[in-house]
Length: 413
Image (tube, rainbow, N blue to C red):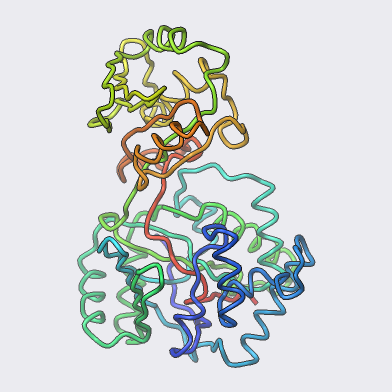
């Protein structure tokens, strides 16, 4: 029974939202970031990269405090204004490919995360959890919602359909050619209906934002323990989420690129591969997998199809059935000697939107020796892994939508 509440968002004024909204900091190249910081004084990047003002890289607690300072300056200048009462926010993105995503921005309970009412499918790294928890505690806000998903719900769909026929509070198109819409849902009857529909669900699933969720939970626990008058209703007991139906998720794979064959010749590598896969040389034919447990491989100017020999592989749980896990267990670890998928410098990743053409280009230019492609995970696989309390290997999914920072802000304090 998820406890999903409306909240009083801090938002840009309507005339400045298109200037403020930014992609995640890491998604920009250095040149793109500098161009925005030099030419757009309202970009949210000024808040999350406060050292740029002083032409200095700043990190740790010093950066956290400067982020807070920049944020407060935006509020003092009335660039950000907090809504007078709690709303649910209906948010729609139509991306440059014409794909549409529509859902509800709301506050989710950290207790639901703790009790597994909000389910996760990825491991998190303790150091990153603690660092982001300290960041949130210092700055006092979160500007990027965690992406949650739920099965199709006719009541929520009808409410969303009704409000999206009205004039949006925000409507803007970015230079990335995504169009964003935001509606304020303030009707009390509809607010109650939304809350009841969410509370009737067995659970929600994290699609993207596992570290943000974990850090919000840690912050809630820390502030609860420091507050002798804790009631459970304080803002730190919740975190900002964007909740969309499962059918609107777009899940892409991450293809793998490896720098070398671990000391093997091409022929030696293929012979070892033959023990686990049926191998077909496709030559120059661009090949993409057509079914599960089939892989594309690009090596020395040629494409190969790899079909798993199922008699040679042990399917023991939901994770073992994932193509990313199969690739790791049969090739990356035993043959190519890659054990740490997060930190080994010999492996890199490219999300499936780029396709195997990107992989081919990187191998042809000599940056990598070999590349592998696979089909993406589907929603049911993701849910099964979460339901079984398992986790996916690193870089198993690239999930859309990707939200802009700074459109709605949740304050913990």
